[in-house]
Length: 387
Ligand code: ZN
Ligand code: ZN
Image (cartoon, rainbow, N blue to C red):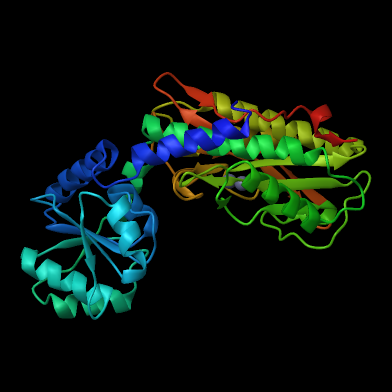
């Protein structure tokens, strides 16, 4: 694990230089793969409206944009408005940066009309009906669009070496911050105090933000898998569940630890060890070619053996990258195989309404031979006690 803040910030800067810029090898390769996919499904162009997608293919780091990638020529347009002109020109180098007129959707239609595209690929779970209607009004020759969201998700799920380095860095930031901040946590502080303290520490260590709204839950609040931090106070013998991650260099980390103040009651200690066993068994099952649903099942089986099967109420894990929840999934319905380069969380949890919950979450890279656990925070039961 990288442990000093200067290194974390230096690595983030190096990654930014390597990955940001529409004419870097990373972006050119990604667009090349996308163009091949578009040709296979006979799409003339891709219209990218999700910020993580246009960053991935053009390097543009701003917001409120649309990227259009022509399948045949590879020409790429980045449409935005004057607030982002300079940022677009700096980061989407190699793309034609255009300030849209009338509206982004209308201008997209005008470009597609000039391209004489008959079919276009869009991300159907993101493009609004209003955008699509305006686009089609401006380019009436367009047929029904193809949903290329799954194609893009599959491509983004497999991380390059540069992306893996960026994610290790986002993890190092979160872990270093957790270790430093937890030494300050004590009985009487509120969930909100802990959340603010940890988030401040992550920013101090180079994070540009949090990967998601940090979950801090004390005692009974921990039975809500996505609890909101409030005024409940840390108390002796009560659990403190923290699900957190850093957003750094465009990439995210996602970790969970369940701590106890002063002492762990025996019943919770048993449950904690069961969750840990389930997590370790699931991690051991990860490898290329293994369906995500099988890995989920391994954890579910271990928890069932401890009589805790019905308290495990969510999927075991998810891909992480430019967004915190992405493909692939470790869940009963995800029967597709894992591939080298996937980075996934493994996060079994058990929840008891009214009394609390436990979750342990780590991040794992699928490798050609098996797996590598990327996170390194202690998880033996004794390390979970905050004295
Ligand atoms: Zn999490
Ligand atoms: Zn997660």
